[in-house]
Length: 338
Image 1 (tube, one colour):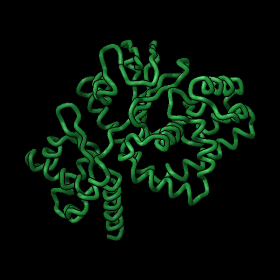
Image 2: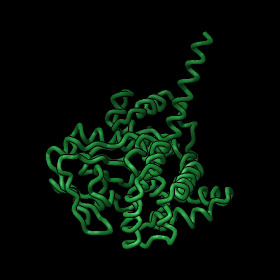
Image 3: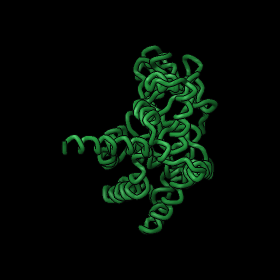
């Protein structure tokens, strides 16, 4: 169990990351290759990722370099997920290269004592060997994560919309209460979460950066070293089993359902995140009618719906966002021609 202790100052400084952290996504996606838990949520990704890794000849590097260094266990080295990666992949990889040798050696030692480190791990203090690691991480990211960027970003934006509404309704504690029971439970002033080891994390006025992660599954993850600025990587709620989605698409739901004016208006209203009641008011229909239109858009893969306290929040999927962008571009082009 991990217990994160908040003060009032910590609640005031708690925030939600605006974008997926590329290095955390690398590490948590590596965990997806090491467990069948939650495999249904990543079935399509897992299949395409394995195919791409085999096609590019990267499987050996994955098995001998990346997976041993990032075990799905109580610990993997903190220097692999530096705070700088919030600024993007390049910044994060540069920070890995710049990590002092003594810190690399210390964290490799922790890995050896907790999960077991590969025999070559001490060579990570060598600049050339660490450059090889960074090159492998970049190749892995470009091969299996970058192609899914739009999907991942859309899910993060939907999560932020839900968090923003929770803050408006109940303050920051509204976020903490809705992070994902039963794995995460807020009992003021402590956030309790399932964790591989028993520990306490005292924020001491530093606040907490909440980082929603597409590839994180089950218990959240944080730094092993409590001296770092506190972060908590936590799992998003995933959609139903992909087989269920395929059944919905084959049942006749399609983009043809969007040809009506009302559903197009509902789709536009969902662009900034809206509850069923807000959709109804924006479009000028009853709440049951708005719910029906939202269901049709959800069946077509254009919106996703998530219960937030007593309300249901509707946000766009990547496909829905792409459709709106294409529609706006078409309208702009027509205006220019006129």
